[in-house]
Length: 110
Image 1 (cartoon, rainbow, N blue to C red):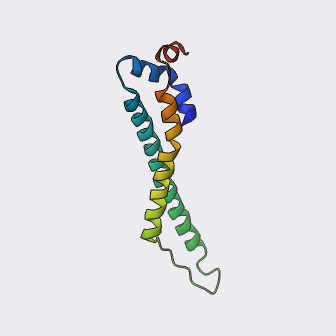
Image 2: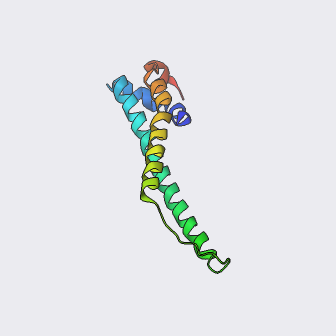
Image 3: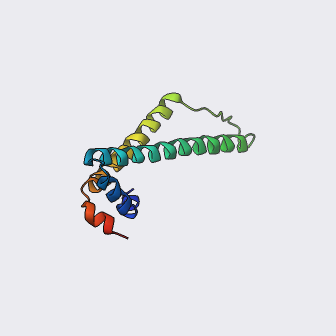
């Protein structure tokens, strides 16, 4: 996210120049971070569940013990919340940095 902020310095400066406040800019970057984390968490959980199911199906008959595919909802919820919290925490520093940008320098950045 820090790289995204660096690449969008000019855009963020223009937003500030047309009236966006520092707190609005911080909130925008934080929400972007949470959305990226949410999509990553959902994608990771879906891919993990699919690969777990594939491994269980592939192991049928491979051993004497039977494997069953199960998704524990409590653990799923905990992992989802941890993913969202990590995204929110990861967005704090870039949001603060974006809000502190000097408007004129940001606009002059290529």
